[in-house]
Length: 168
Image (cartoon, rainbow, N blue to C red; front, side, top):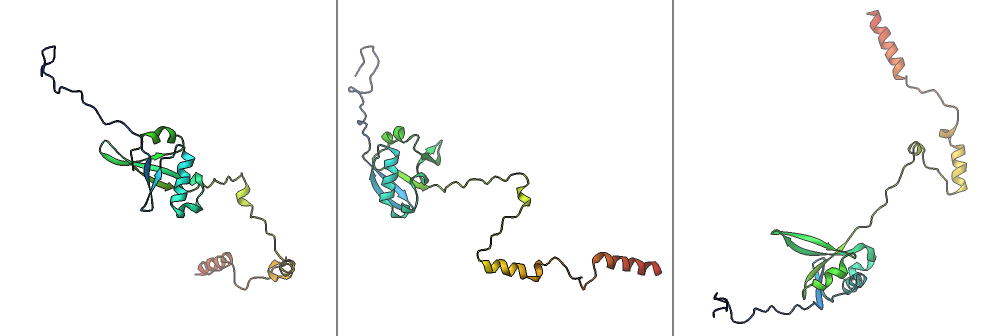
């Protein structure tokens, strides 16, 4: 068919793409297990669906759970985290039965700060029983007087050896 401008047209009817529909069901994957879940409208609901779908997640609080999607970027397969900040914007673009990986993020352990000089001070010791205190007071290792060591010190041995070499 010829276009009114004199050029040929590729088709006589406009090309229509299928109507874009939002997913109603997606798939969660956790430890090689799969579960269909409804698309949550909010991130907190998505985490609750994960808790309900996988009993192994019962011991983890909601803050430890997040999601990733597998994507290809410039031909390289990669994972993209879908967290609470973008859930409301990203979830409408999920396709029906799309797979989201459920990921447990280890909790952060706060760093302990050491104040200057505290590294030289041993922690306090508090005995649990009064007998322990009595034992410590009567223990010979805690007495103030110290018996002479039966073995000579290293410095006295060196002096003797030096004196022996002088005689030679």
